[in-house]
Length: 269
Length: 301
Image 1 (cartoon, rainbow over the protein chains, first blue to last red):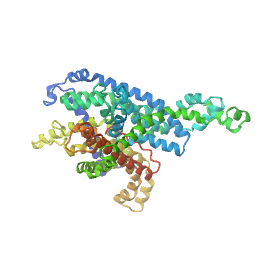
Image 2 (cartoon, chains in turn green, orange):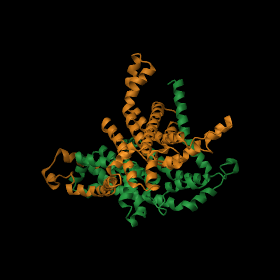
Image 3 (cartoon, chains in turn red, yellow):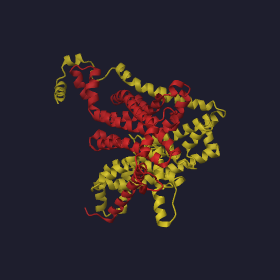
Image 4 (tube, one colour):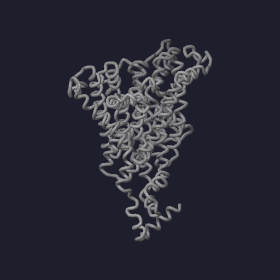
């Protein structure tokens, strides 16, 4: 194909848009390892800020990772069976329930957090623990797990598979764990990556639900941006990027692998 | 797979014995289905439905009663914030749609070295928290930002706009692009190239092909991703929070009412109205485009 002026104009716009995304990321990564941002790179490179962030905020990083794992655990237990029922029993009731399930995604996190605070804010032991934040994260991420798993489940011929297994004498739970779950693995994997990524990066809900003792990574970031020097905020952001990039890249690879179900979830985003 | 073999055999010769041994085999019993539903039901009921209902009622118990819900229209400050937030979200959505339609179509139609890197880059901020997006704007247009540095070198004066409405706009655009570009690319892949060939062979100019063939084909994708983009922008909080701009977007007003003024009924009423707007927006588009399976990713808000 001959490349025309239009091609190069479009390419130019695309590159411009990419620069818009990438330049600040690189800038902040550099600022996180620069001795003095105001003097620029000529002041030299250092890991001092990274260590300082670690001293100040290591607990927030661990809490975020812990929350993400706990959130994944809950969404797996609640979400995979839920997806199964939604796919297996299509009807008015399941549609309604699905709509209800996705509502927490449509409603702004702030509103959701407010509702949780007003209802459960008085339960002191619960409100001050990490479980309170976990509640918000589960509400927000559960629909993604369900959608991702349901997309794969409705693409596979679950009825035939199940009938086959049943005719061989497998009871329901045996079928569920040895036939359905293994076959839905691409969807579960995509959903799991999504849940972990979203949980690690969640701010809107978490900012309202956190206490000084339950600070997550994004909450710590907001704190650092507001009250620390630019280098510390940048170094902290760099740590966040290092944490989240592998997850994002894994998600893209999974989506690009061309397996239909994984693609479907990529489009859902 | 041996399973397939067994299956076929079972199907072609459904022996009486096997159907007797496994009564309604494939369908799990209602009891089992209920058990499967319980964890999800409990979570949604206890932590979503009940709190939401409670908040809705709480508003009625406030000093202004149910009239609190009307405050968003009668109170000048809230109304102004609502209008600003609507205008901002609509503006960002339009901008993101135009940019992503051009770039998305380009990336789907052309194959060249580095294409997948460009796609990867554009979808990178998909789950950045709003605070990080705000910080990215500061890196770009803040006091030490790239744009300031460039304009300082070129014209001798620093251009700084991270902390006003332009900065907020840039931030919203930053987290909108990944969502919109993915949706646009998905629907661009489904476009029927033969339609364009036909139009061209009938003598349609490039412009006519874009207006009459490509754009109508992309429209469902543009509408649904636009709705997601709009809803996300309406509820975005972290970016405005980090930039601490003087423009009060609705989520910031809710936050201020709740934390600084402890005005819980008003904060609750405003957030319910905000929730209704975003939900209605998404629901309308879903019924319009049929079986829309789009889930907005709110991570970057």
